[in-house]
Image (tube, rainbow, N blue to C red):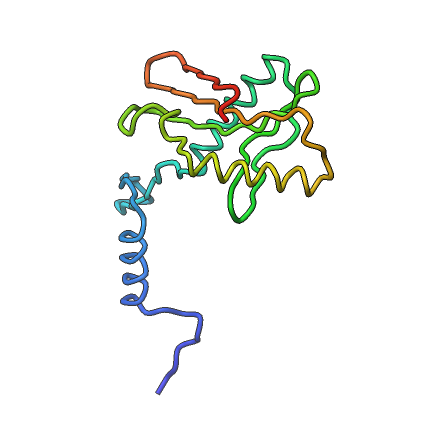
Length: 163
């Protein structure tokens, strides 16, 4: 009785892995012609929430740099909340929540900033100041809502202060 090496898989097992892969991800199927008459299926993923959020934060960084702000920190994460941007201008430290939308399906971006979200941001700001030994002299919590509808100019709504 011949035993296969532990790292090899049967065709059935390989098909099962591919099947599970197809089920576990929401992918668009695209046919690509291979060598000879063989055809391969390539799955092209849509951007993740994180990738979309990073794109929005990149727009926000550019927006604030053009307005004369200095970027101090980005994506500061604590278990109870996150600070998207920490920026500074005229001795005022701004903690910015960036909301980015590419459609109005779920409403305007600024509408998604809830009381609970602001509460978590406040906790994160206090922790940020504590961790860095900073005094809370001139700080502000802001919201930058970015709406990038297809075929239109990007719309920025800066709510300062938001709290």
